[in-house]
Image 1 (cartoon, rainbow over the protein chains, first blue to last red):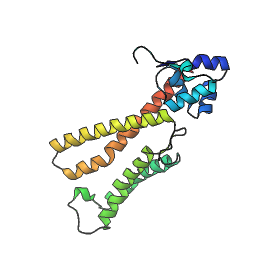
Image 2: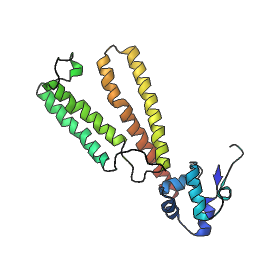
Image 3: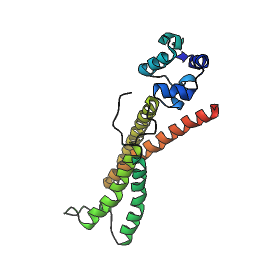
Length: 66
Length: 143
């Protein structure tokens, strides 16, 4: 699964730390999600999408191998 | 994330304190001629000198390791929980490998029990701390 959190963060002009604080996780977790090393739970993915005010599918996308 | 039962963050210091405290206890006890009951056939009564010595050493250490292993991280999020479960899985694998190997190759069952008291906890702590170290290192690399 890939995501465009980095792009969305840039649009909203917030840091990894800000996003982490808003969704209640550590900065490390946001970093590993952005670099596709960790797949978040549905609850966390929905929380992240809510911060950006967009539907889940616009932030997270399935890849061919998924 | 649903709350899971873990000891508070400060308990890890208490746990390390217990692990460290067992070393002088063990040295003093042995200097005074105490023998671990696992080194000797069990005596008939509880709370004899040797039994108390056993409690003060092996059990204090095991309790300390247990508290260290199951203390909350500063930020306990789902990724930390994932690493925790993964490390626990590896600790169980290693523990059973050691257990099976020792059951086959060692006749001394009392020491196998003692080994089982701390192998899974030590391995879990090492694996978990290493996973967190790697996580933090990847963060500092990317800035």
